[in-house]
Length: 270
Image 1 (spheres, rainbow, N blue to C red):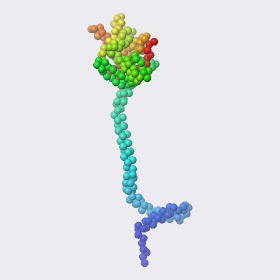
Image 2: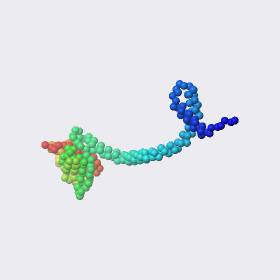
Image 3: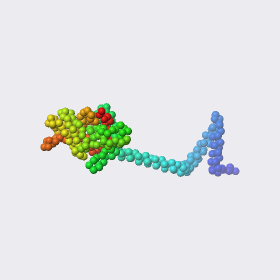
Image 4: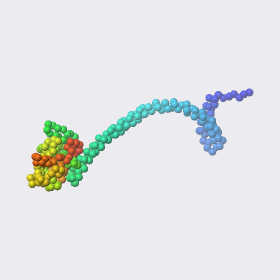
Protein backbone atom coordinates (compact mmCIF):
# COMPACT_ATOMS: atom_id res chain seq x y z
CA UNK A 1 0.00 0.00 0.00
CA UNK A 2 1.40 3.38 -0.98
CA UNK A 3 2.41 5.84 1.74
CA UNK A 4 0.25 8.98 1.69
CA UNK A 5 2.06 12.08 0.49
CA UNK A 6 2.19 15.31 2.44
CA UNK A 7 0.99 18.32 0.39
CA UNK A 8 3.90 20.56 -0.63
CA UNK A 9 2.49 23.64 1.12
CA UNK A 10 2.19 21.78 4.37
CA UNK A 11 5.72 20.48 3.89
CA UNK A 12 7.08 24.03 3.54
CA UNK A 13 5.30 25.09 6.72
CA UNK A 14 6.60 22.08 8.56
CA UNK A 15 10.18 22.67 7.46
CA UNK A 16 9.98 26.36 8.40
CA UNK A 17 8.67 25.49 11.85
CA UNK A 18 11.43 22.94 12.29
CA UNK A 19 14.09 25.46 11.29
CA UNK A 20 12.71 28.01 13.71
CA UNK A 21 12.75 25.48 16.53
CA UNK A 22 16.32 24.52 15.79
CA UNK A 23 17.40 28.17 15.76
CA UNK A 24 16.13 28.55 19.31
CA UNK A 25 17.97 25.54 20.65
CA UNK A 26 21.32 26.26 22.31
CA UNK A 27 22.98 23.18 20.91
CA UNK A 28 26.45 24.48 20.32
CA UNK A 29 28.89 21.56 20.47
CA UNK A 30 26.13 18.96 19.95
CA UNK A 31 27.01 17.48 16.56
CA UNK A 32 23.77 15.71 15.58
CA UNK A 33 21.63 18.79 16.14
CA UNK A 34 24.05 21.02 14.20
CA UNK A 35 24.02 18.59 11.28
CA UNK A 36 20.24 18.51 11.32
CA UNK A 37 20.12 22.34 11.39
CA UNK A 38 22.41 22.54 8.34
CA UNK A 39 20.27 20.02 6.47
CA UNK A 40 17.06 21.87 7.21
CA UNK A 41 18.57 25.26 6.26
CA UNK A 42 19.76 23.85 2.93
CA UNK A 43 16.23 22.67 2.19
CA UNK A 44 14.44 25.83 3.30
CA UNK A 45 16.94 28.36 1.81
CA UNK A 46 15.43 28.29 -1.74
CA UNK A 47 11.97 28.67 -0.29
CA UNK A 48 12.91 31.66 1.92
CA UNK A 49 14.77 33.29 -0.96
CA UNK A 50 11.73 32.91 -3.16
CA UNK A 51 9.51 34.39 -0.50
CA UNK A 52 11.89 37.35 -0.09
CA UNK A 53 11.82 38.00 -3.83
CA UNK A 54 8.05 37.75 -3.88
CA UNK A 55 7.43 40.21 -1.06
CA UNK A 56 10.25 42.72 -1.92
CA UNK A 57 8.02 44.82 -4.24
CA UNK A 58 5.46 45.05 -1.46
CA UNK A 59 8.18 46.03 1.03
CA UNK A 60 9.64 48.65 -1.30
CA UNK A 61 6.22 50.08 -1.97
CA UNK A 62 5.49 50.26 1.74
CA UNK A 63 8.81 52.00 2.49
CA UNK A 64 8.22 54.43 -0.35
CA UNK A 65 4.77 55.29 0.97
CA UNK A 66 6.01 55.71 4.53
CA UNK A 67 9.07 57.87 3.59
CA UNK A 68 7.50 59.83 0.70
CA UNK A 69 7.23 63.08 2.68
CA UNK A 70 10.88 62.78 3.79
CA UNK A 71 11.99 62.33 0.19
CA UNK A 72 9.98 65.34 -0.90
CA UNK A 73 11.54 67.48 1.84
CA UNK A 74 15.03 66.30 0.91
CA UNK A 75 14.42 67.05 -2.76
CA UNK A 76 13.16 70.51 -1.85
CA UNK A 77 16.31 71.14 0.21
CA UNK A 78 18.52 69.97 -2.63
CA UNK A 79 16.71 72.20 -5.13
CA UNK A 80 17.08 75.18 -2.80
CA UNK A 81 20.79 74.46 -2.29
CA UNK A 82 21.28 74.14 -6.05
CA UNK A 83 19.55 77.48 -6.61
CA UNK A 84 21.81 79.10 -3.99
CA UNK A 85 24.95 77.73 -5.64
CA UNK A 86 23.79 78.86 -9.08
CA UNK A 87 23.14 82.32 -7.65
CA UNK A 88 26.64 82.47 -6.19
CA UNK A 89 28.15 81.49 -9.52
CA UNK A 90 26.20 84.26 -11.25
CA UNK A 91 27.42 86.76 -8.64
CA UNK A 92 31.10 85.89 -9.04
CA UNK A 93 31.83 88.66 -11.60
CA UNK A 94 30.09 91.24 -9.39
CA UNK A 95 31.95 90.01 -6.31
CA UNK A 96 35.24 90.19 -8.18
CA UNK A 97 34.52 93.78 -9.23
CA UNK A 98 33.54 94.73 -5.68
CA UNK A 99 36.75 93.20 -4.33
CA UNK A 100 38.81 95.15 -6.86
CA UNK A 101 37.03 98.37 -5.90
CA UNK A 102 37.60 97.69 -2.21
CA UNK A 103 41.30 97.05 -2.77
CA UNK A 104 41.56 100.18 -4.90
CA UNK A 105 40.14 102.21 -2.01
CA UNK A 106 42.27 100.73 0.75
CA UNK A 107 45.72 100.09 -0.74
CA UNK A 108 47.27 103.49 -0.03
CA UNK A 109 50.94 103.53 -0.93
CA UNK A 110 51.23 107.25 -0.18
CA UNK A 111 50.05 107.02 3.45
CA UNK A 112 51.85 105.08 6.16
CA UNK A 113 50.50 105.18 9.71
CA UNK A 114 47.68 107.72 9.41
CA UNK A 115 44.50 106.40 11.08
CA UNK A 116 41.75 105.69 8.57
CA UNK A 117 38.36 104.11 8.05
CA UNK A 118 37.03 102.54 4.88
CA UNK A 119 33.51 103.55 3.87
CA UNK A 120 31.05 102.33 1.27
CA UNK A 121 29.23 104.76 -1.01
CA UNK A 122 25.52 104.36 -0.22
CA UNK A 123 24.29 107.23 -2.38
CA UNK A 124 25.72 109.20 -5.29
CA UNK A 125 23.22 111.66 -6.69
CA UNK A 126 23.02 115.01 -8.40
CA UNK A 127 20.77 117.77 -7.14
CA UNK A 128 20.78 120.64 -9.62
CA UNK A 129 24.43 121.54 -10.09
CA UNK A 130 25.57 119.77 -6.94
CA UNK A 131 26.76 116.19 -6.63
CA UNK A 132 26.08 114.60 -3.26
CA UNK A 133 28.10 111.52 -2.28
CA UNK A 134 27.01 109.81 0.93
CA UNK A 135 29.10 107.29 2.87
CA UNK A 136 28.11 104.69 5.48
CA UNK A 137 30.53 105.95 8.17
CA UNK A 138 30.05 108.82 10.57
CA UNK A 139 30.99 110.28 13.93
CA UNK A 140 30.57 106.89 15.63
CA UNK A 141 33.53 105.78 13.52
CA UNK A 142 35.66 108.82 14.35
CA UNK A 143 34.78 110.82 11.22
CA UNK A 144 34.73 114.61 11.47
CA UNK A 145 34.04 117.43 9.06
CA UNK A 146 36.92 118.53 6.76
CA UNK A 147 38.68 115.15 6.91
CA UNK A 148 40.23 114.15 3.55
CA UNK A 149 38.75 111.32 1.49
CA UNK A 150 40.95 109.25 -0.83
CA UNK A 151 41.32 106.11 -2.89
CA UNK A 152 44.51 104.28 -3.79
CA UNK A 153 44.74 106.58 -6.84
CA UNK A 154 44.68 109.84 -4.92
CA UNK A 155 42.56 112.60 -3.42
CA UNK A 156 38.78 112.45 -3.91
CA UNK A 157 37.56 115.29 -1.70
CA UNK A 158 36.73 115.98 1.92
CA UNK A 159 33.94 115.47 4.43
CA UNK A 160 31.50 118.38 4.74
CA UNK A 161 28.66 116.93 6.83
CA UNK A 162 28.61 114.19 9.50
CA UNK A 163 25.93 112.31 11.43
CA UNK A 164 26.36 109.37 13.77
CA UNK A 165 26.54 106.79 10.97
CA UNK A 166 26.66 108.80 7.74
CA UNK A 167 28.83 111.44 6.13
CA UNK A 168 28.60 113.62 3.02
CA UNK A 169 31.70 114.45 1.01
CA UNK A 170 32.53 117.26 -1.41
CA UNK A 171 34.53 116.21 -4.45
CA UNK A 172 37.77 117.87 -5.49
CA UNK A 173 36.08 119.10 -8.70
CA UNK A 174 33.59 121.20 -6.71
CA UNK A 175 34.32 124.96 -7.14
CA UNK A 176 33.96 125.41 -3.38
CA UNK A 177 36.89 123.11 -2.62
CA UNK A 178 40.50 124.34 -2.59
CA UNK A 179 43.64 122.32 -1.91
CA UNK A 180 47.24 123.37 -1.40
CA UNK A 181 49.50 121.39 -3.76
CA UNK A 182 53.16 121.00 -4.68
CA UNK A 183 55.03 119.60 -7.67
CA UNK A 184 57.43 116.86 -6.51
CA UNK A 185 59.62 117.44 -9.58
CA UNK A 186 60.05 121.21 -9.49
CA UNK A 187 58.92 122.15 -6.00
CA UNK A 188 56.37 124.60 -7.47
CA UNK A 189 53.57 125.49 -5.08
CA UNK A 190 49.97 126.16 -5.99
CA UNK A 191 46.33 126.08 -4.92
CA UNK A 192 43.66 124.15 -6.78
CA UNK A 193 40.00 124.98 -7.23
CA UNK A 194 37.28 122.91 -8.82
CA UNK A 195 35.87 123.71 -12.26
CA UNK A 196 32.68 121.68 -11.96
CA UNK A 197 31.54 118.13 -12.53
CA UNK A 198 33.56 116.24 -15.14
CA UNK A 199 36.11 119.05 -15.59
CA UNK A 200 39.79 119.34 -14.78
CA UNK A 201 40.64 121.36 -11.70
CA UNK A 202 42.42 124.69 -12.11
CA UNK A 203 45.72 125.24 -10.33
CA UNK A 204 46.99 128.69 -9.44
CA UNK A 205 50.79 128.44 -9.42
CA UNK A 206 53.33 130.92 -8.07
CA UNK A 207 54.52 133.19 -10.91
CA UNK A 208 58.20 132.35 -10.56
CA UNK A 209 57.42 128.63 -10.91
CA UNK A 210 55.13 128.71 -13.96
CA UNK A 211 57.82 127.84 -16.48
CA UNK A 212 58.88 124.82 -14.49
CA UNK A 213 55.40 123.30 -14.63
CA UNK A 214 54.89 121.47 -17.90
CA UNK A 215 52.36 119.02 -19.31
CA UNK A 216 52.72 115.58 -17.76
CA UNK A 217 54.02 116.77 -14.42
CA UNK A 218 52.14 115.81 -11.30
CA UNK A 219 50.92 117.57 -8.19
CA UNK A 220 50.27 116.24 -4.72
CA UNK A 221 49.04 117.71 -1.46
CA UNK A 222 51.61 120.01 0.12
CA UNK A 223 50.85 119.10 3.75
CA UNK A 224 51.69 122.57 5.05
CA UNK A 225 50.89 123.57 8.62
CA UNK A 226 47.21 123.86 9.52
CA UNK A 227 46.24 121.80 6.50
CA UNK A 228 43.78 118.93 6.96
CA UNK A 229 45.44 117.15 4.03
CA UNK A 230 48.57 115.14 4.84
CA UNK A 231 51.39 115.76 2.39
CA UNK A 232 52.06 113.40 -0.49
CA UNK A 233 48.50 112.51 -1.55
CA UNK A 234 48.40 112.42 -5.39
CA UNK A 235 46.08 115.05 -6.84
CA UNK A 236 46.60 114.72 -10.58
CA UNK A 237 48.50 115.33 -13.77
CA UNK A 238 49.21 118.78 -15.20
CA UNK A 239 47.86 119.90 -18.59
CA UNK A 240 49.20 123.21 -19.98
CA UNK A 241 47.07 125.37 -22.30
CA UNK A 242 49.78 127.48 -23.92
CA UNK A 243 47.38 129.78 -25.77
CA UNK A 244 45.64 130.92 -22.62
CA UNK A 245 48.61 130.25 -20.36
CA UNK A 246 46.40 128.16 -18.09
CA UNK A 247 47.46 125.09 -16.23
CA UNK A 248 44.90 122.54 -15.13
CA UNK A 249 45.10 119.18 -13.40
CA UNK A 250 43.53 115.95 -14.55
CA UNK A 251 42.32 114.38 -11.31
CA UNK A 252 44.16 111.17 -10.46
CA UNK A 253 41.19 109.45 -8.78
CA UNK A 254 38.37 108.04 -10.90
CA UNK A 255 35.42 110.10 -9.65
CA UNK A 256 32.89 108.41 -11.93
CA UNK A 257 33.10 105.00 -10.29
CA UNK A 258 33.03 105.57 -6.56
CA UNK A 259 32.15 102.40 -4.62
CA UNK A 260 34.49 102.36 -1.60
CA UNK A 261 36.48 105.28 -0.19
CA UNK A 262 38.93 105.76 2.63
CA UNK A 263 38.53 108.60 5.11
CA UNK A 264 41.77 109.74 6.72
CA UNK A 265 41.11 110.42 10.41
CA UNK A 266 43.34 113.49 10.52
CA UNK A 267 42.69 115.67 13.60
CA UNK A 268 41.83 119.32 13.14
CA UNK A 269 45.00 121.46 13.16
CA UNK A 270 45.59 123.00 16.58
